[in-house]
Image (tube, rainbow, N blue to C red):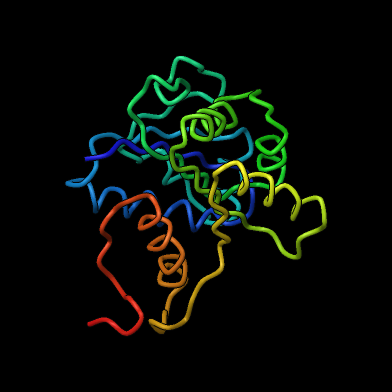
Length: 186
């Protein structure tokens, strides 16, 4: 059983956060604890893109973006992964620069310094050179850049199905057994 922190930032791609949070509920037998932190714009983007406030029904502990008392703000915690989904380019840039100005970036700093999993689900297109260099910096520091790029091997039909192709991969990277489609495997 693992402990996972989730950060939702204000990048476009709230459907990825929605599917991620739903899948974490589905996989609860593998998870000891989930802590969630939202950036200031994440709620606004969710409401605009998804047309609802379903984030209010999330059954996980929600931490304020400035609450450095959250367990995953410290290397002494037993959280093994932080998934930032979606990860805005501003958030990625602050992580790459070592700026721990809120709980999201502090938790990312902790994951990197403790050599734990930091998975950044970036959602931007196209990338500029600064963004590519920030992705390189975070990767060289031990983070994983997992773009919110759906695959089509499983022939997804709905938007949720397409988002799940990304989230399944993210959860596998975090160490969870998701089941689901795997190329060439029954």
